[in-house]
Image (tube, rainbow, N blue to C red; front, side, top):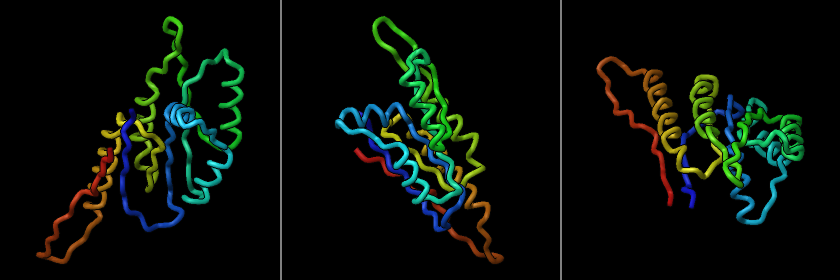
Length: 166
């Protein structure tokens, strides 16, 4: 069973640079488990409305490039406005498996960290917990560097809290 993770970073600036990273494999599996379908165009609109037009939405998924239905799905996501990153599914015996997708998402998130003020992760995968910890820690360090005090004044600056549910 997947772990639920909730990161809290307080942000009061509206329509600041926001990066939303979607673990497409997890989203697909989670919605199948509860017998639901996602309207990806509507989902995109909701995210833009919530976080503003200065938002980049990155969708990470695995693909069997010989499957025309999957190829059309990812083309549709791009047309909607998602920045799509795919890894090729690997066939092992009778099943296809995804390799490297989570690592790619985490590496890309860390590389883009300085270009956004808000970070949103759509996933329930506990493997992303170290990524969230690192992002929160880097945000806390950045905040500490920007803090100014009067001569002789000291204040304790704490890291933002990371809550792990489950």
